Length: 329
Image 1: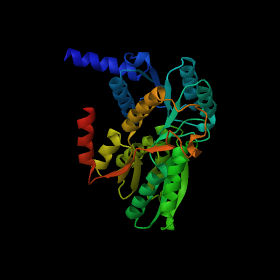
Image 2: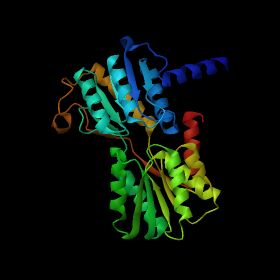
Image 3: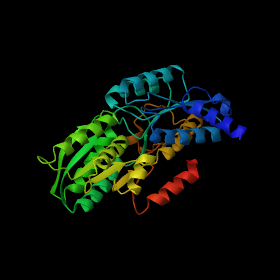
C-alpha cells in the first residue's frame, strides 16, 4: 500500500509539471500544454501522457493554466520553449493567441504537434484528435431524433476554438434535413461553467416567452450544468446533448437527464502524441517548417483521427465499467 501511495504521489507531481520524470532515452523531455488542466478530460489526457512517458522512460511534464486562459497558455508555451524540450504537444485554446508561440518553437528546432484543438495556420507538424465535424454530425443526428424534427435549441460553445467551430458546423449540416429545428441562441461560456448554469436558469425563467426544447453543449463543462439546473427545478421533457465523458456527465445520463454525449479519447490523443514526438526525435523528418500537409511524400500525417462515439443510456454502464478497468476510477 505504501508503494502504491508513493507511486500516485510521484505520478501526480509529474502530471502537474512539478517534477521532471527523467530517465532513459538520454534524458529526453517532452511537454504537454493545455488550459483547464485539472478538469477530468485533461486529467485523462495527463494519464495517457504519463503512461507513454513511463513506457518510453523519458522525462515528461504537463503544464498550463487551471482555467480557460489563452494568454496564460501562451506564457506556458513560451516557458516550455525556453527550456528546449525535445517536443511539445499542445491543445490550442485560441489559435490567434498561440500561433506565434508554436512557430517560435518550430524555428527553435522543437517539434510541435497539436491535439484536441488545432492551429492549422501555424507551423505545427500535424494534428491528433477527434474529427470534430463528424462529432457534430453525430450529435446533430441524435438531436433530430430526440426532438422528432422540431424544436428551439440553445448552443453552448466557445467560438474562438477551432474544434468547437467544426462541431457546430457538423451540427448545422446534420440539422439541414430538419428545418423546423432552430438554433435560436449561441452562447459563449468563456470556459466558465457558471455561465452555462446562469444562462440556462434565465432561459427557463423566460419559458412563457420562448420555450427552449433542447441544449447542445459543444464542450465538456456545460452539459452537467444544464442538467443540474433542470434537475433542481424538476423540469423534464428537455433534451441535452453533451460533450465528453467526465463522471458527472455519465451520471446524468444514467439518471436520464442528459440524453446523450459525444465521447472523445483524450487519453489516446496524449498517449499517441508522446509516442509520435519521441519517434520524431529519433527519426527526424528533416526541416521542421516544411509544408508537410501538402507534400506528396510526407513522412508525417496531416491528421491522426482518434475517434469518437455516442454514449447514451443504452451503453453508459458498459462505458463506465470499461473506464474503471483502465483508470481504476
